Amino acid sequence: MSTRGLGEEESVEACIDALDETATVLAHHPPRALAAALAVHLQAVLGVLHGQGECSAQEIRQWLEELVRGACGDDA
Image 1: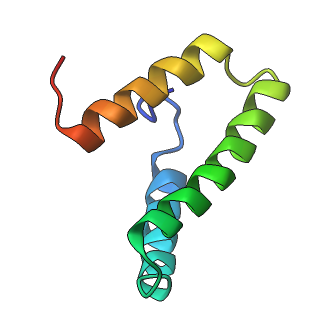
Image 2: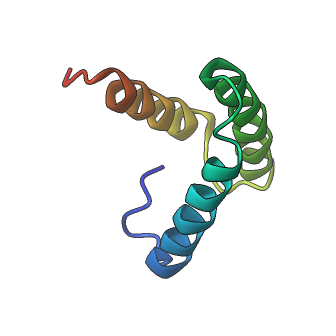
């Protein structure tokens, strides 16, 4: 589920900017609480995408694996 090739680069950039602003507002929360809340929302968004046929379960798994590699600094 890479954002590349979606033809929505401007929308993605605008969303990133909005999320950056929101993260600033939420910075007073403990990182684990923020991560848990974001995970709940991400699960809901991915569920909608999957339910609407926008992506497969395998695509979601691959995307989440990319997130883990990015977050943990793993190249494998």
